[in-house]
Image 1 (cartoon, helix red, strand yellow):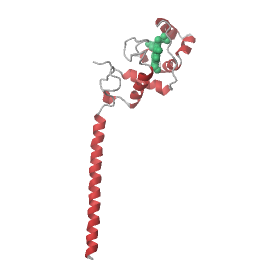
Image 2: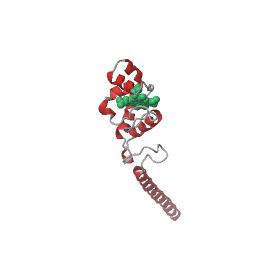
Image 3: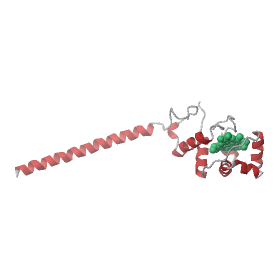
Image 4: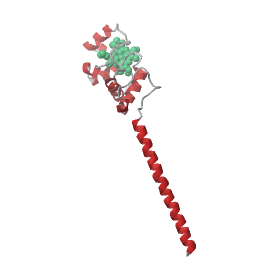
Length: 155
Ligand code: HEC
């Protein structure tokens, strides 16, 4: 009988130990998650000339938009007001609808060729500089303009 009780208490101690370990692990995971939540997802090492007033608030979609913008548009456009090769895109959604912008980015030459007065005027103003077509989906383009809308210059 005694050896049985001994074994039983050994097993009990083992179970208690595992539960304690599990609790410690859970607490550690939780505190790590808290740190990750408060750490901005952007920082040094991406594109240094842009910064954000509040990096923590940038949504997943906007960070996708920023990457797409950096890879495809940045060489010709600022998300602010400055002219680079093409016009600064600040406030673009006040000038054009998102549907127009999707068509434009996918094939700006087609919009100009269709005789769209806004597009023709802009094309002439920028000395008939061609903006190439982009093989981007409507969602990609929406993400780009969401990033442009959320962009604030360094203050
Ligand atoms: C090679 C340079 C170049 C690249 C790359 C480029 N653009 Fe353009 N973009 C232009 C030029 C130049 C214009 C002015 C119209 C024209 O000449 O066709 C323009 C015009 C625009 C306009 C209209 C702006 C206004 O004020 O109405 C939007 C919107 C735009 N581009 C978005 C984009 C986006 C989004 C990307 C990336 C996916 C992009 N562009 C990539 C050169 C470029």
